[in-house]
Amino acid sequence: MNDNALKTCLAGLEFRNPTMLASGILGYSTESLKRIAEAGAGGVVTKSIGVKPRMGYPNPTVVQANCGIINAMGLPNPGIAEYASEISFTKIITKVPLIVSVYGFSAKEYAEVAKTATEEGADAVELNVSCPHVKQTGSEIGQNPKLLAQVVRKVKAATRKPVIVKLSPNVTDIVEIAQAAITARADALTAVNTVRAIAIDTETTLPILSNTRGGLSGPAIKPIALRAVYDIYEGTKTPIIGCGGITNWQDAVEFLLAGASAIQIGTAIAQQNPEVFQIINRGLSAYLKKKKFRSVKEIVGQAHRS
Ligand code: RRO
Image (cartoon, rainbow, N blue to C red):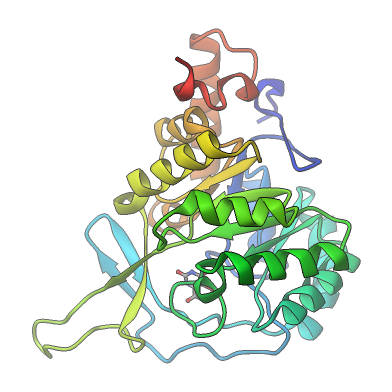
């Protein structure tokens, strides 16, 4: 679908529409990212990549909850050396902006992976400082404004491409964390990663996930994610990508009104299928026409007007 009203600019990148694949849902392979782009996504974000390959946690790593999914995959990934050669190829094949999600166990590791990924052709990096259940990375960094600022600064010094910071909802004051990232010159923020959660098996009487705790995604967290976007927009003026439980075009509109310039879709792909991108974009387009808005940009942050 080609509708000029849906065109979105964010952190210097141009997207044909404001929808993106959220990190973690369909991994890294060129084939699956291409499928998502063909289904109508305006951009794609890979699963998080680190310096070294990681197996992740043993099964079970995913459990269905009411209105969502709890996962604790444990950052399985092939490592940047193995993945690097696929980045430029994926970029050519998908034909939409390719954002590589990056994690590390130190600022140096984040910077090293971001440098390689952008040299290989990634259009931007999204720093995963919000994985809720792997020690010494993810939210252990993203819950600490000082550590977070160190990571963002080091990455900014390693690449000229846009640096997006994915925030955790598992914090007391998300605006304080957002400010730390912005002061360190983050180009945009993604709000939010999954909410810390657990599921227990009544037969075995034990937690279901091998890691015990995991991250909840899907419709259950939408109001939490929406509040995070609303708060960040009110407290800062940096572009925001809304993420968390977006399932239909009405959800997408709510995030834009709250202050997101773009949105990411994850769990809805697993629960519906990649066609969700086209369905949401059609709905957005019809909404703009009906309300006589000329572009998506016009509705960003409208819920804040007084
Ligand atoms: O791999 C995971 O277990 C995982 C990651 Br990296 C993340 O950022 N968020 C999440 O819920 N799971």
